[in-house]
Length: 571
Image (cartoon, rainbow, N blue to C red; front, side, top):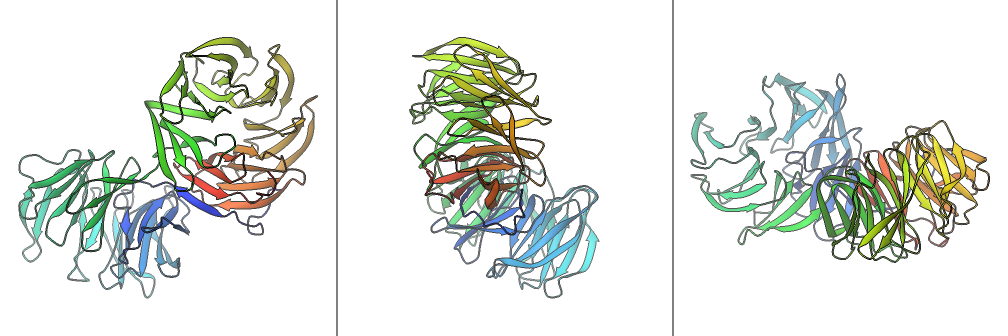
């Protein structure tokens, strides 16, 4: 039933929101000046600077750790991390064909850095801390031609000298100053800055044609320095440590990428930062569309909730709650508020236009709020906690009242869905139980038990059946009336099914999980109709907009993927 992904039609991927800012020098501009190149999980993304259109290079089996582009632009090279004791892949891509030119293996655990020779004949790779070797590869023969141990200390980067194909340098880690070395004498020429060092080290630097130097430091300072004496000419504070600097053309325009997964654009003359791309820099836990619209959607993660414009992938609003993690969120059906569940045990309600805090329910759950849902009349919230309790809250103007606490689950409540008449709800828990509750008498109507940790539950729109998913890789269909099992599908070939959502018509539903595939299913047939390949990390949540305009899936690597929904005619 899980199906062979090779034989099933592919979902059309419309956009990816994500950038791994922890990869040093991971953001590149292709010499053709038309595309960004950057990593996200185990994918290398090519993004048009003109219209934002994205293309994807798939081939790595684990997170990409370094990226570089040859001087001619003909080749891209990317390295990855892998498990201890295994060899890490290094892939050379043909830029024009968007295909693998060569897959090379020699370094253990991680490829730390890469550099092409100016004539495109050689590629040099640097192994990570557990490898510590430098290898020179021939692009023609696709084989290693020589190698050398690097150093006992950790290195971070490699570079070829622009005037020769036989000289290269390696650079170390965590230093707060810049050194200039005479290549003829191989002696230190000068170092700087004299007075104020770069806080938290120099992460990345670029020498411009003018001789001036762009410096990105660990404290988020982006600095333009004078070439001869390293004196600061201009500087700008960015969000997150600067890890990448990419120059477009002759240096009239340049870009900076930060650890906060943000990309900024600068002009040389005004040196004003323009934030052109934002992303989550940690796992995205949940996603929701407002009722009746696919124009925007909200996601939640550590530290914040973000509202995105679907068509442009632009961040419209960021609601920050520092040092806290939002586990789940939803739009109230009237669209006037976003309700959210947080690991500090609080329920927070925000205005979706401004991000203003409308209500905070303190101590809603003792072990964090883990699931949340709002009633259709917008007067009540049902929440679930890490301790297993389900609570019903009445929402009044600027205040709240606890109506009832229902204590039957023995472990974390992972999902809550409310029936359309607001008189019943179903809760899924990692204790292996799904409970259907009466929201008038606040008692249990039915219980479904399975040998799994339930992760998600959905009512069929006709509300006579529920479907469940969890760690046993199964999709279960159950009768609401008596809790009896109707059918069971093999939902995944490997790993848990973490997210599930059903269309308004009930004809199709979508799943995603540790298999990293988004699957659209025919509800009646129990067959997969489409598969979406694109995630590099485990999928945490999936949702279909109520107007069937699109679907969005999120994952642990901070990625948010928007897909074209393949069955728009069935509303």
